[in-house]
Length: 161
Image (cartoon, rainbow, N blue to C red; front, side):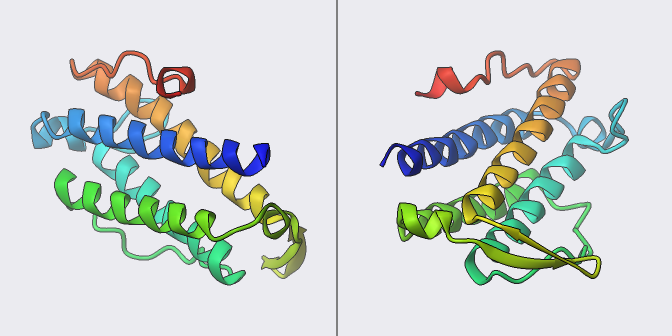
């Protein structure tokens, strides 16, 4: 059971660090939340919104095995509180999905059509993609928050186990 236990731990880490970063972002004024970040061009607000929406797309794929990548009209002006509620809902739904999976379920290949090509992956690959995608953006957000005087300090996984 180490594989599933590890993934459960990583989903909890995903939740905790996202909550911490969102709490720090809530202390910033709108102009700091909406300033484009060097390198990414996305603002703090848009990065959080992108993360929550992408979590939803990957979670939907994990639950339904159907692609849900069509970019919607992400609300670029959602408040941090609204984004935090959306992110919390996505993470809770993801944790519930994972709770219902067995190790065998996580290993069973599923197909996805991407740009007309059929790809096969195990559900744990999709889950790891969701988690590592979040890690990339958390690193960007940690740098942006630090630039705005709201450093999260350590966000390493080991700090949460």
